[in-house]
Image (tube, rainbow, N blue to C red; front, side):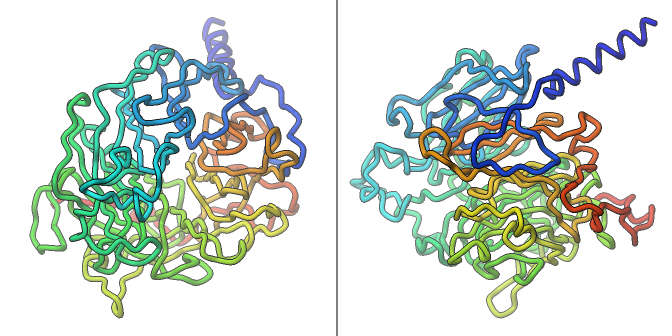
Amino acid sequence: MRRAVLLLAALAGAFATTGALASAATPPPGAAISDSLEYMGRVPDSSMIVEGKFDTVMGRDVLVTTGRYGFRTYDVRDASRPRLLDTYQPAEILGKNGYWQDEDMEIDRKRKLIIGALDPRHDDVDQESCPGIGTLGSKNRNPKCRSGFYVISYKNPGHLEQIGKFNEVPAGHTTSCVDGCKYVWTGGPARREDLNYLGPFTPGGRGDGRPIWVTDLRNPRKPKTFEQPIDLGRNDGLTDYSHDVNVDAQGFAWVSGRGGLLGYATRGKWRDPKIDRVRRAHPWDPVLVAGGGLPGGENGVAQPGTDFIHNANRPTDGKVRAAGVRKGNVALMTEEDFTGPDCDDAGRIVAADITSSLGGEGATNSRPGSEFRMTALDSFHPAINAKDTQSPNAGCSAHYFEVSGSTLAAAWYNQGLRLIDASNARNLRQVGYYYVNGTDPATNPSSNSWDTAWRGNLVYLFDMDRGIEILRLKGGPHHSAKLASVREPRRAPDRLAKVPVSGLTPGSLVCPLFVAQ
């Protein structure tokens, strides 16, 4: 009897955490929502948000967010009804709504630290004094045209506190943890004029010369940035725009940017394809182990050759699979693209097989005329693959996504939220959607979605104009994305329902993806 009581209590706790006991709300005017989702609500006064991440602090469930307002923390013990705890905006250079951009805010869950990137495009800077949107003059420049990152403690989530001074770095847009947040990698649009040796500053063109800068963060009060950048020569031999970093469950750091996706080892001994010998990898001197550019075509990127891979994820748990591809060899990524005249040419989500890139030889030796490209498995774009659910609003490029099991919750600018089943990476398919065609710019704006986060069977959508919106997968916890069982009932019978992946043998999955030398 005691065991049954404890089990019921545990289930009740799980339902409360995911918001399963909360009642759904009426979707806003102009909303389009799939039958697989229900609308839970919108957090008041949360617009201008960029993204958020969850953590537990002294037993309290907390959502840490960033946006033009700086940083905010929310109590999410009632996951469907977040409660604001504190707001912090660095005061020395920024106005009330001037933080820009910290697009992929990083948190150190062990030390309870926010590492918030800043590039020069905040609201108190005359952009003419920061030419090229971030080409920072090294002499006689506007002192406010700074790039780098802040360190903010959320050890007490009700009292956010800055740790040390602003850490100036030659780049600033995203800052990501590697090696357990002992080091951080910073990339993005800002670049000083004394860095011309990295290549001409040509926004939107090849060879933009904006690599990754590495900072030792073992002492968060006194970070030390290394003099030499990394991720050089990423685009067919040219140093280009390194945008963001994602570290997978095996510890490999994947850098997204113009020219594709590159994976690095930051520890252990590996054969370095650039010097053809085995050496030890370090966070400040990593070894390229995989990755490369992407082809165009139906399954690939919209802009081959100048494709801008915005962010990526390499699932390692085997839930994202493709027939004939070893477990862990599928990478998921978004292409950000605004060059097309309409939605049909905008950026996509792409699944790629990284097998041919292992060892790093392909990317190392790739040059114009003899380009190396990874194998594209499939791509998804609402205007191409789900036209009947396409939003009438412009701004159709993919942005950030988060994977739960084999289901992607993808933020898609004006196309809102798209749930994509990637259990068969050769057939990316939409299983849910939500967007708003707004009725009032002030009170009910159109979707301008930037990022997402899973919370059990809840999806948090972080929308620059609408703020935080919360949606729930129907059917309770057994329909959570971790089980990859979401179905879109609007198209019954579903000819594309998930089937077991064929063509793999048990023995083909026993080897790890990478083996240190």
